[in-house]
Image 1 (cartoon, rainbow, N blue to C red):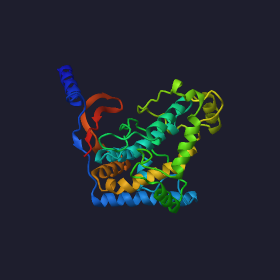
Image 2 (image 1 turned 135 degrees about the vertical axis):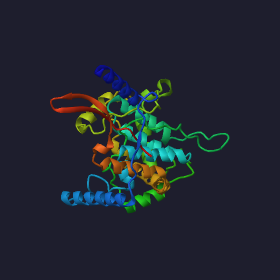
Image 3 (image 1 turned 90 degrees about the vertical axis):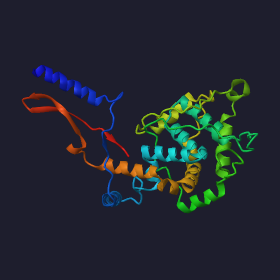
Image 4 (image 1 turned 120 degrees about the horizontal axis):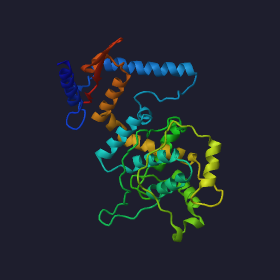
Length: 321
């Protein structure tokens, strides 16, 4: 009889965790109250200020919580912000450019040269006008399919006043030069550098480089690479030149990238903060900081008994609303 009871309990347990092709949420995540959210917000800001004072630095290694940089420096925040931009209109080229630039920065060897050519062809050179709309044809929309794509906070070296001036000089919503919507000295410098780099015998019409425009996953973003070894590898494995000429350094895009990011912020940040996507992101961050408690789990059944007590099966099926 006990064996039959155990068999029935096992069947119930299996059915409970395999509802309609797989686990399903059975408990909605608790939404923080206004008081709880305010307390958590103050705690995060205080923690950031304390870390700033302890380090003795004007700027901490981490961005101030709840700011534009803070969202971009978190992989989920970057994903949700990028998805929001792509969902509200047809203005996706600049955020796609930033995504591809981040991917390029964390590649090594031969793949870096191929990815760089892809960026050059997709965003930095002139495109033909669409015959119907008379507008520059945009590159195809791409989505983020990585779990570790985030902006590396700390690369920002441009002061606020200088950045505002650069944006005023380089913002080009008419997209006269390219679909990226940026023109000016920084744009010209980047294009000139890359044009000269690609102007080699191996890049003639007879030996054109095949450009992979698909979205590729990145290596572990936390992996540190010796700059000397990386530079040596780039020289050896450059697919665009058989000589020892190195691939253009990552610093080539620093100021240009900041201009594009600031333009994106001006156009989309306030709308994102007022959206439900931002609320979901903040609620998730609040839940992530909470300590896990027994009430977060649902007790299924006792699996067995031993000398150290009962062994129980627990699951945490929650629905994020």
